[in-house]
Structures are given as structure tokens and as C-alpha cells.
Length: 492
Image 1 (cartoon, rainbow, N blue to C red):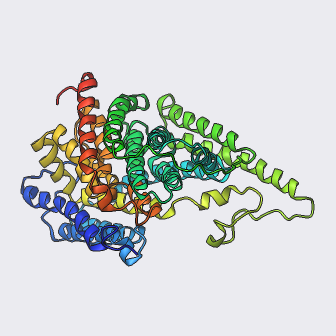
Image 2: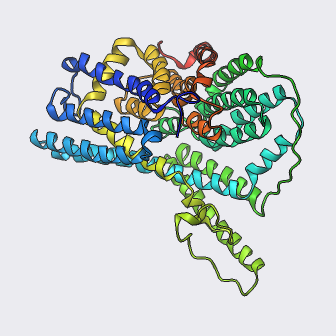
Image 3: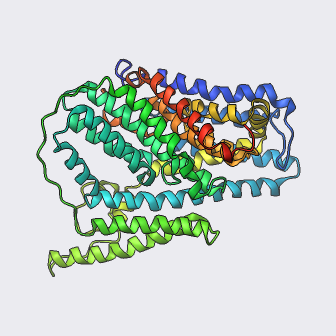
């Protein structure tokens, strides 16, 4: 349970994020009479449309209040998704467009299935590498190094920045935050500054890779940015992190913490799994770039290869246990066995440890936002922002919306709007959606996870004290993109 002093109380977080969410209905109200329907109907002024909007706001309020009421975030949005699409079906049926409603919901389901399977494969690989001891080896090497606090601050940030493009920003932030807490010991100031650095570095590093963040994966799978084109954001991402870290590092002392002598060993096959993960990523890129197939096919093929290798590991472990041992079942018997399971290697154990609540949450958000789009609300926002304000201003504001609400629903809403933008603008929104979430600790999954990792030390208000430095890095990165990648803009 949170307390208001060490971390924003449930009411504070609820108000902060709901205030950002409230901006969307205000835009709807201002522009509803000017919206024009394209393929979908314009039902923004209908009673059913307004009811759908209210359902979404109430469901998202429950998501924001998760730590207060202890209701998993996936539950309200899944229910809201069903209710919203029921209202869509009624509204479209009354207009004689039932077939169109079915077509729209199938489109949203396809979006989710591709994202779900891709993430499931990636999470299973990450969980397997963790189970084999790869990440623990990294942690032990750092806590045993004996470097100064300031040097460790830069090293942990650099590792987070470089690891995030492959391991995703959430996993990276959790791993490196654990290292920072181990290094800091009783030095709470170092832990706070190190955690801020890790969150900023993980979010910035995740910007220039389809595998670094959910939003970059969405943009890549939608075909707006090709794999190699993401690397145009390397320098802006570096600028974002280095400027922020450079300012914060001035507050980090140069003292040397006491080295912790600990040993770590990678289990048999750990480095093979790392190699297979590299092969899987290569297949995902190749399926998309050369075969013009969804990248999820490459990821699932790689998951199949891991499962085959997992069978070898299981049989090898079984052989070492002796002929009298019984083969384990195909998967752990219950959720209670997920953490303490110590038997022969079991791939289903790592599958089960995936973030299922998060995966199902994506289903609810995608279907909710898609349902609001079916009522015409996304067309209204698109008209107001990308036509009225212009793409550059709108894409910069997306970063602030990501910090207040969350970058996933914001990005999916933009993708559903389908604004006509050039490569430079799609890269800009890729950067702002990812890096913008760092401005508040609640603005990204990485920040929220690290608040739990360093509970009571790394807090909302501790992060807020340095938001000005993070915002400065955010705008420096935008400037670097506009300056260095001007050739991919057809107009700003």
C-alpha cells in the first residue's frame, strides 16, 4: 500500500493521469460538429457514442487506481472493451452497417493477436535467459566491481541504454534497478538518482529498435517505419539520455561503495539461448523485410526452436537426475509452482511467467480505443490535432500525453487515426512516445515497475524533482532529430 509522502497517493496519481485522459473528451466536445466520416460512421454526438466514452474513462480510472483497490488493470478494460463493442454493434446495426462493425472489430483483433504472439515469444526468451542466470551474472559483476558511485551511475545507465533495444525497456529497467539498489545499500540518494537514470536510459534506448518498446513494435508492424530506419533515432536517443544523465550525475558523489563479493554461474545452455534469441530477431526482421510477411511469424518460429532446444535441456537434466527420477509434466501444475519450481528445465515454466496481466491489458486497450474509433472519436482528434495544430506540434505533445496517461493507448489511437505523415514525422512520434514517458515516473511501464522495485525510495515526487532535466533532454533529442534527419521530412 502506498503512502502519500513517499509516493503519490492513489488519489494524487488518479487525478494526475485522469486529468491527462480528460483532455481527450474536451477535444471531442469542441470538434464533434466538424468531424467528417470516412469509412466509419460519425456517431460522436449519439447517446451510444457518449456512453462508450464514459465507459472507457471509468475503466481507465480503475486502471489508474490499481494499487489502491488491488484490481488488476486488465480486468476493467476487458469488460469495457466488450461493452463498447456491444454499443458499436447496436449503433451500426441501427444504421444498417452491421457487417462494417464486424469488419472493424476483426481488424482490431488481428492487431492484438500479432502483438500478443510477438510479445509472448520475446518474454519467453527473456524469462529463459533469466532462468539460465545470464542477467544475474551481469548483476554480480557490477556489484563486485568496486567502482565509484559516479562511475557506477554512468555504467548502469549505459548498460540500460544498450540492453533496452533488445530486452525491452521494462525488463531492462527492472534488472538494472535491482543492480542500483544492491550498489546503493543505505545510500538512498544514489538509489534515487540511479533509478531515474535507469528509467530515462531504458526508455531512450528502446526508441531506436522495434524490440525496445511496445510503441516501436506497433509502428514497425504497421509498416510506417522499416527496421533499419529506426536507427536514425540513435543520436537523438543518445542526446536525450546523455543530457539528462549529465545533469543528474553532478549530484552523484564520487565515493566508492564497499565491493560485494559474490559468485554467479550461467547454467548449461544459457549462452546458446542468447544466440537463439539473436537468430529469432534476425528471422523476425527477415520475414518482414524480405518475405513481406508479419514479423510475428519469425518470432513464433524462433519460439518453436527454443522449445525444441528446451526439450534437449529437459532430457539432459533428467539424465543427470538418474534413472529413478520421474519425467516432469508438460507444465507446472499451478501458479504456485511458477517461482519455486526447481525440476528439470521446462519451457512451459518460462511461458507461464510471462506478464499475462499486461498482455490481456493490451487486448482491452486496443479493443477500447478501436471501439471509440468506430464511433468517430479518433477522426475528431485527428482533425483537431494533425490538421489544426500540424504534425510536428501534435507529435511533440504526444510525449506529454504519454507521461500523463501511458504511451500504449496514445500510440494505438494515433495509429488508428492514420494521419498522413512522412517518415520524419513517424520517427518523431516514435521518439516522443517513448522518451516522453520518462518525464513522470508514472509515464512509462519502466518507471512504474522501478517504483515497485525501490519502493519508498524511488518515488513519484523524487522523480518529479528532476523532471525539468528530463524535459530538457527530451527537447534536445527532438532538436537533434529535426537537425540531423531533415532529409526524411517532406515538411515540418
